Length: 65
Image (cartoon, rainbow, N blue to C red; front, side, top):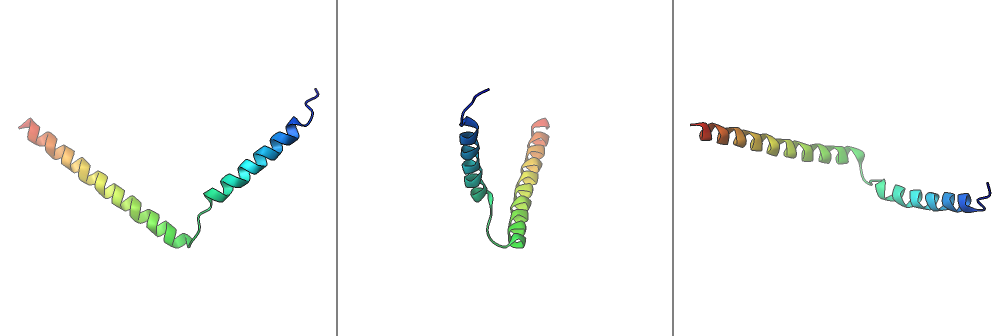
């Protein structure tokens, strides 16, 4: 089993890759503001989904008549 320095090179590449992806994942700013913003976005999406669902049921009721 002689792999030479391949393991060490692979470790270095993976460490470099992990370091660059960890920077991108971190979000800045106030966590409470971010949570409130995320919650408002989800509420808006849910409202739109509910409206779309209500419209589809209304359309189905019209088509049955």
